[in-house]
Length: 278
Image (tube, rainbow, N blue to C red; front, top):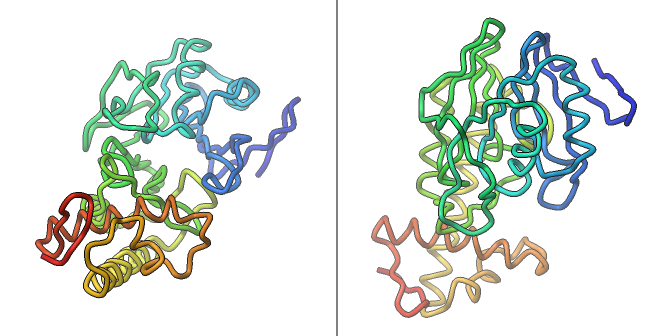
């Protein structure tokens, strides 16, 4: 079911009491835009209001059509949480999540009045959301399991149709793979991502992501063996032959994440910014 309001920004009712509104911030990195989710009908919780776009913040309130009592964020990257402060000012809602880490590309305006940890819940008469700590893409990344639906709202931990950038030092490949396995163990009925459509086959998608990352790690180790004493950027063409050169800057971040994991595993060493086999 979809609905339209005066600004004609559509929303989708995914099931009774769960609505999705897509922020108007499409790009190469965000796909069609950041998904904002609304839970409940009598008293509403909003997840990931997205960037500070006044028209989108206004539209969230129109779609809610009821008091917004809680605002949650999966993490504090600029396409997910800057709208929180604006929406909280407009509604007086309680803000929940994990504070921004001391790292680049973080939204430091996000200041939760209630800090959530793994297993903490937002319980209301209409729904229960359980926080699942999933570091990797960001150290403060939380997914949220909707208890009644057994759906996991995954933010950028798992997105539809693509892989996510792991950007060190806050991004961590070892933590990311561990978190993916944690999500698989939950055996949720669906994954509901921060970008794109609902994923109805969680095990297949998670297995594909883990396999893809480990296959890439094998390529990194092989490239390192064949091309010692290169920087992470110099290694990119040897590992990401399938990636457009325009994306090599982002590819280097994930490549560095793989190298750091290999270093943790005792396979690689970095000396003065140049990498060799351990």
